[in-house]
Structures are given as C-alpha cells and as structure tokens.
Length: 476
Ligand SMILES: Nc1ncnc2c1ncn2[C@@H]1O[C@H](COP(=O)(O)OP(=O)(O)OP(=O)(O)O)[C@@H](O)[C@H]1O
Ligand SMILES: [Mg+2]
Image 1 (spheres, rainbow, N blue to C red):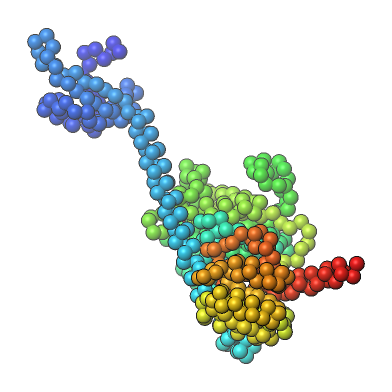
Image 2 (cartoon, rainbow, N blue to C red; image 1 turned 45 degrees about the horizontal axis):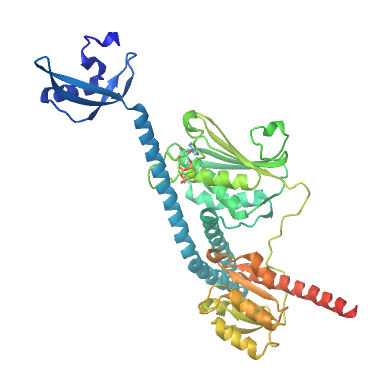
C-alpha cells in the first residue's frame, strides 16, 4: 500500500490503455469504464475504473476507484460458453425433430425405391449388367435407410439393432464408398492381422464410425496428401490394461485403428476433441460432432476409443470393441432363400404406392392379398369375413385409426391372428405394449422383401407352435 503513495497512477495502467485513461482524466469523465491494469509483476488484467472529480482543500481533485474484474470476466466468458452450448443443443434438438418429421416420408420414398429395385432385380437376368446395377441401387438405398435411423438414434435415442458381424466386411465396404471422394494424393492402406473375430454391433454404427474417422484423417491431409491406414487386429486386454476404463470388461477385443500422416493434434486440445461441438474447422466444414458420436458408439458397445498423435507425424485413433467370446457365426445376409406362402394376407397401408408395392411383393411370394388403403375399411372388411384372412400386415401411422388400434380390434375378433406391424423410425411404438396385445412381429420401414419374408416366417412359426400348444392342451 505504501508503495502507492506518491506514485503516478498511470503506472498501474497497461500501456495499451494509458491514452484512453489520460483522455478521460483530461475530460473529467465520471462514468465507469474498462481498461487494462498492470500488476507489479508486469502481468496485465481486466480493470474497471470509476472516477469522481471532487473539491479537496480548495482544489479540484480526482478520486478513482480501481476494480480488478478478472473473476467477473471469467464468469461472463463461462456464461457465454454455456449460452452458446445451449443454443447448439437446442439446434440439435430442432434438427432431431425435423429429422423425425422427415423420416416418415423419407422412409416411404425409400420403401418404394428399394421395393421396386428389388422387384426389377428379380425380373432381370441374373448376373446381367442391369442386375448388378440394381444391386447398387439396393445397396445405396439400404445405406440411406440406415443413415436416417442413425441420425434419429443420435437425436432421439432410438434403439439400434446390434447383430453379430464381421467388422472386416463393413470396413471393406466403407472404403469402397470412400475411395472415390478422396484426392489421389491420399493413399488408402487396409490391413487385417490374421482372422478377425466377430463383434456385436449395428452395422450402420460401425459404418458411421469408420466414415467419421476417415473424414477427419482426410481433412488432416487435404493440403499435403499422405497415407490413410485402416487396420484391424485381435487383442486381449486384462484388468490392469483397462485401469483407465473402469466400465470396460477385460477380455478379447477387436481393435480398429485409423491413422493418418497429417499434422497431428496439438497436446493442448487433445482432451477436448471428443467433446460435442469441439471443432477447429471453419463453419460449414465441421460441427465438432464426429468424435463425440464415435465415442458414444464405442462406449455403447462396451468398448472405448483412444487417440495418439505426434505433432508433424500424424494421428492414430484406436477403437476397441468387445469380441464375441464364443464362435457365433455372423448372421448371414441372404435374400436368396425365400419361404413361399399360400395364405391370405390382409395388407393395410394408406400410401397407395407402398400398398401396391407390398401387394406385389407378397403375390410374388405366392400369397393371396387383399389390399386396403384405409384402416376403417380394413376393419369393416375383416368383420365381414373374419375367417377369410390368415395374416394381417398393417402400417402403424394412418389417418382415422392407427395400425396398433386396428390390430387390437382385429384381435378381439380373432385372438391368435398373426399380425405384422410396420412402423417408421419417427413413430416407434412401445414394442412391449404391442407384444402384450398380441402383435407378433414388427418391421421397420422402409419394408424390404427380406424383412417381409423374415417377419412372415416369424409369425408363421409362432402360429404353428401356438397351434401345437393348443392341441396339447386340448388333448390333455
Ligand atoms: N486425424 C486428425 N488429425 C488432426 N486433427 C484431428 C484429427 N481428427 C480430429 N481432429 C481434431 O479434432 C477436432 C474434432 O473432431 P470431430 O470429428 O469431433 O469434429 P470435426 O471434424 O471438426 O467436425 P465434424 O466431424 O462434426 O464434421 C477437429 O476439429 C480437429 O481439430
Ligand atoms: Mg470430424
């Protein structure tokens, strides 16, 4: 305090704002204002000044209040950060709602694209150019349907469908999609060490994870070119190896590494790259969600992600997924084996094009089909001849009466009738409640022939086993 006596007050002000303070002294300014203060150790800090010109012993003097506002500034910055995070979160929520709204219509469109492509493929000569091109249409359409689901899974926590799968297959497929969009200065190398174990995951999630990691690697090497390596290996991790990840169970893992030879990631941001909305990219190029999604996917599958980087040499992201302990064979993707039916199906969908498509699909599988574009008409039709139909396949979202309500009414008349409910991602109904009222199977729209056949098999099998139960009970 003593040091201050007789000191030139301007010495307490950083040189950058001394002129401003001088001007205010000269003009006798009396309102509070901000300047930059200077500490004894030369450090600068945010300062708030407020002066009064007062008479003192017959002279006019200026009394000045100095207030260190470092903490207030920090609190304000934090408030602004939270505010912008909130705005981002609200934006994401809005996107989620929008996506949910679009998903219903989009799925219907995709349903028509996929369905007609599948039928055109059946009509085309096996192995012909046309048939191969249609395979591409079906592949791309299925991918699009998966992505819609993924967007919604992120924004609305829709349940994903994990299945046993071979990650090698998905990675090869992703690289095939990615390669054309990369400049020739980036070389892709893919390697798998030995025979890779299977994991349990939703194929779309793995696809998204690989795409996000490869996009980051691509952005990192966009200017310079380089090598993008994607490797798969089996690894066993013990409890001490996993000390940092208390929620991960020790055991066998499949490790997917994606590495680049870009500039690397500065150590000071490495802790933040997995945070939602953290990005160093310009607006329009990155949202900062990529790694947050990757982290979410790996964690939800019981695994984790690590990042290593050396400045100037590149970065490597390793995703660890728990491997399937027993040798469960991955689910075979096949549309070749098709069970044929002779039953009479009542098919209900308010979208005419989808209804026609469903009818054609079922007729090609040798079912008899009665089509209804309206749930009330469908119910009336069923009431008239309840024993005419063997299976009901109905859309969920329809004006007048939902598929769920139609099913309930129909089950009052024929309690064991096999029913398949087709639902869009945007209107996921409570599966438990539906099972409780007796709906036997669900199909996620867009409906493909494969899904339809599988659901028909499922309801038929459960119908047969129920029939057996009934017979056993009656014979007792
Ligand atoms: N391979 C990499 N090399 C260098 N920096 C990287 C790499 N991968 C990620 N980063 C850094 O981490 C940040 C966050 O990545 P993240 O994938 O979460 O978001 P983004 O790529 O910026 O945007 P989005 O993925 O949503 O389009 C990036 O902005 C970048 O600074
Ligand atoms: Mg990214």
